[in-house]
Picture (cartoon, rainbow, N blue to C red):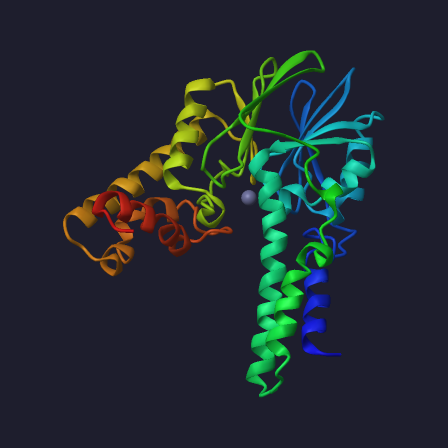
Length: 335
Ligand SMILES: [Zn+2]
């Protein structure tokens, strides 16, 4: 098998919805009652929110494709109705992997317009990277072939035919800012939070139940992942949490992107943590300290590290690396 062709095969496998390649039928889904008829499903991947009622099932996020059977079994313990609507809070595979299966069950998938374009872009980038890598590998192994470059180019040109991205894994309905559902006896507001975790984030507020689901624009007791490659930013993350603070009250229950049910006090804490870290980095930058010096300052994160905020997906180093360029650009005018 020539290497380009092998690369294409690898690209096809890699482009499967995240999770479809993994077979973990025994992963556990935990059902948590949030309030009234709002539930949260925990387990591997992002938290799922559910509204159950006379109209049917309204679902927010759908973990990995391999999780779908367990998710549907967990839902069956609560209701015999089918999932009518699914909202994707953003494009990451641990929140959208189940789209293809839920759509197959008759659900309509909604997401911000950038979620759809990001999902397509991620698959295209992966395809291109795999072809480049195959070509590089061939060169490194000393394969001298006049046709190598030609084959690389023709593989690139076939991207639209070869891309293994099932359109049914993409949101069926996209929107720019807000959506309002009147469903299961309450108004459900879906609103876009610009450039926070990604550039396609939405949060979902159940107005009567007073429950807010944030996606990864808030995670409980952990440093946030600011995915700047996909349009996320610290400024947007802080603005998003500030907006949340203006909407909620002390009775609001929050389903975070990851972690347990949170409250207004938790949001306030993360918001003050992020502004503290931002302001301290800015202070030291303006005072002429180097990146290396600032990154080594334990005062930036000590109090949060002690609470375990760096023990999860984003450790302290990764958080600082992710926010530093943006703060440096703002306060020192660097690109
Ligand atoms: Zn995410």
